[in-house]
Image 1 (tube, rainbow, N blue to C red):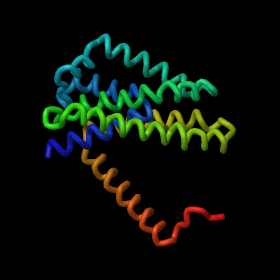
Image 2 (cartoon, rainbow, N blue to C red):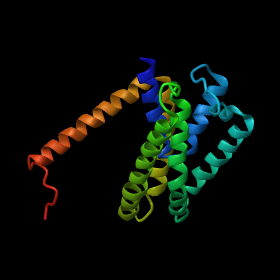
Image 3 (cartoon, rainbow, N blue to C red):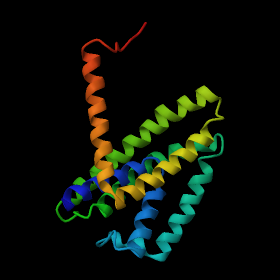
Image 4 (cartoon, helix red, strand yellow):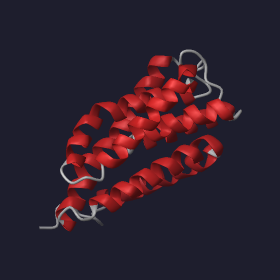
Length: 192
């Protein structure tokens, strides 16, 4: 059961990295440093260094403010297109307490894909839609919500990974239902 919960924890953390690269890294670093909830193995135990924790605080602060400033937030999203998937790979590999049971390359690839997918949806679909619908006024609210979701998902992923498992199952069921209904013609792809 630890294997499955470790995997769900890793998926939740890497998904939150797709919203904010540094929050899940900071959560892992602090929980590993101060609690028995996460035991990082080499080389990931470097995250518990005070230098790394300090750097993560600085980077999280920079990203927090950069993502709230008009125009700067779009530049930030371009930069984060590389950073967030890499952060997702790191948190997946570092947090999957089963890293010895899962090949490191597979862990890193899974983290890259999960964080990268979340980031692409955020940067290509959600943010441009919010910008267009609100003339940019809604971006700050959405950014704060993204940071809050990233924080909560990061903590829940470590403390109660079964919640992440339930969310994944619900999302998969929803996706299957939507795809089935589309195939049956209930939701036409093109309404014109």
